[in-house]
Image (cartoon, rainbow over all chains, first blue to last red; front, side, top):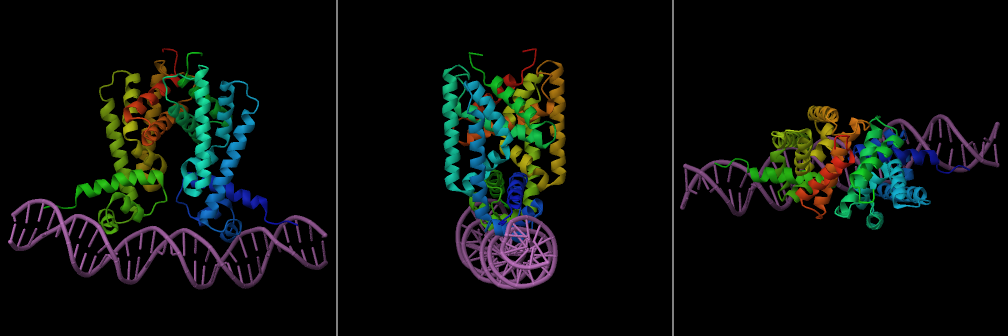
Length: 185
Length: 185
DNA sequence: TCGTCATGAGACACATATGTCTCGTATGGT
DNA sequence: ACCATACGAGACATATGTGTCTCATGACGA
């Protein structure tokens, strides 16, 4: 017995991440069109705009978190961990973009969780500093910013068709690791 | 005889760049409040939302272009040129953000000009590659993306209060130059 | 001091986006 | 083949944002 078609829901979600990244002011009608779905159907899945945004924030957080955790599960060094996290982040860049730019607005709780994950990142950066992976004279906050924004840069490159996700992630990793290099490298 | 107060107009423009960067869906009422002006006054300066966005796009393009041109006027090497351009870009980051994320939408013509300026940037990057400043194996498109996104990273750091514009720009420059380093450095 | 004019506040009409509903259709499970 | 139900299309009411107008106020220059 088929309840709500998962295909439809997924199509809406995927279209939403891409559309709202391109046009944050897009209407629900625009979204329905982009998802190839009727406007009424959109409301069957998500009662209203706030609920949709909250759901997107939650989904984005879960998927991003899981992707990074899975990717870095068997990393033995901070270097390997950051490299794998970068690849996972690029693959989930649409989610991270949403969280960074609509997250707090959409759902305060998810926004707080995202902030907490950024804090974790900064703690890992500090530990990596201890191992000489990052230059101590470079502020941790800057390294975190670079990590996030190079992810977006890679995503942009992918969307423009000038690189595959893997190629873009490799470039991001190269720039990240070389651009913030510490004494032990 | 005082015509339209430039103070008011400038307050609106400045508030608009900051507000629309934080909340792209903000209403004109929100903008008026943020700028500390009445909603009617906003309409006296800019007839409607599309006109406001067009004006912002035009202003952003002019100010960014002039700032970069002035800063790099007496640069003798590509290295110095890129470094000065980075500082100028960070100072004008709110303008660059608007152009990158609302520019085409706001005004097709300005959008085209912005794209042209990015093309110029890529040409300069290619020339700098010839001098060994950038690694030849790194795609020019990636270097351009990094330039833009490190600017945003620096702006973010400034807004969070964790660095002054100068400090942030220095960090961005360091990461940019080290992260994309060519054989001659 | 006086007059001009930009402004803020608020009322108003209008446009667009949002949310609900109905109905006919198609799809998938039984 | 039958039935349940998710769906698209479209009509409709409502909410929110947008744009216009009026009027009182205050600042500035003459």
